[in-house]
Image 1 (cartoon, rainbow, N blue to C red):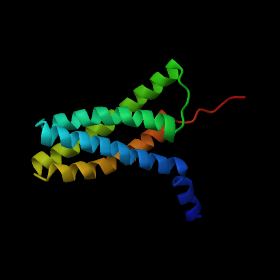
Image 2 (tube, helix red, strand yellow; image 1 turned 60 degrees about the horizontal axis):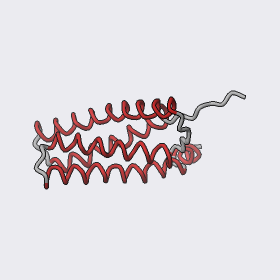
Image 3 (cartoon, rainbow, N blue to C red; image 1 turned 90 degrees about the horizontal axis):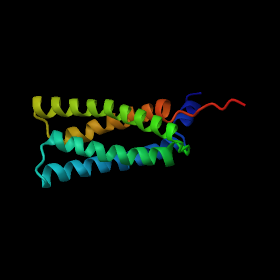
Image 4 (tube, one colour; image 1 turned 180 degrees about the vertical axis):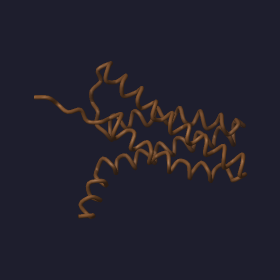
Length: 141
């Protein structure tokens, strides 16, 4: 019984999401690191730039490869993008709050906090994308 539930959860779509989630996290982390370490941008500004580029990458890969939403009508595309962006803003807020609390208040290394925060963000974003943004539409026949 439990084995069947696990198989339902860990399917091809989930594996693709994890793969592209790792790539999205890499985009986020690389941009963040370049901005903070090489461009001298404050960590919160760096986090914002990293978020923007990661969201663009994630939307494209999630739409096309993970959730296979190949409807490109303007209305559908706008709904998906706006709801995707809204969900990502929620997770970005969570990421920024975690960064602020653990870096500024608890003085923990920002890169360690960034990695741990991104694990939570990836999980939260999967549920937003799966059940809200790219939810399969039922076809009335």
